[in-house]
Image 1 (cartoon, rainbow, N blue to C red):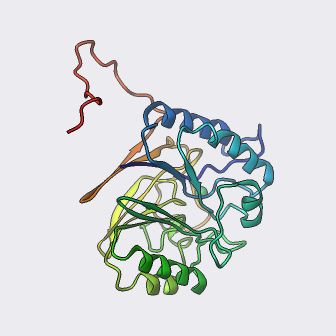
Image 2: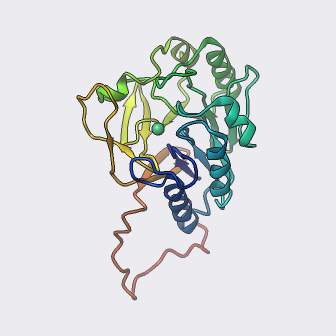
Length: 272
Ligand SMILES: [Fe+2]
């Protein structure tokens, strides 16, 4: 199964720039790239910071762009998003039984849990007792099937001072919810605007760049968060029963050299 992750779009009012870039054009370029190569994916997850300021016009602009995707898509909250405005403007937003924007996507290869890690009015993340209760319920419901977690804020340090202070700062309820479950295969993250992968307590994780600006590769600046103009990427993720592979694709670089005329291509009509 192939899925797509797109993160940290940071849309501003149509025509406005952010870090000298146009976030709507940046998102459109990403969607065009995904449509060109990944239309066979099962679905796409936008993992938060869809808007830079939580304004309604940014979510309307997002819908205009995202609706061009040839894929079913799901939306998550980031710290720059506003929960109420998000829900009013994005029909894909789903509240859980406690009112948070959390949902489960059930597939033949396991359950994908999309978490809401927002601390209202803050840039850091939080995961409260009610959200932890929901997570625990979903983990029980998965009944041993593989579980893949998407969350905007990392629940652990990733080695960058400016972002480590903006993780989920109190993981008590997150850790209590996942305690004893050994079927969590991977955590997909946003928020950090960089390409990072690793392993936390035997769970692999990955972080992707955003579609507009990035965060500078500077481990020691504590505040403010240093921005950078590194290239944007989306994530193409291949999932099998015994393997998960994340391909971050820096679509804006367009560095492909010409493919020779005598190249041999995969025959996609063949099933093995
Ligand atoms: Fe962000």
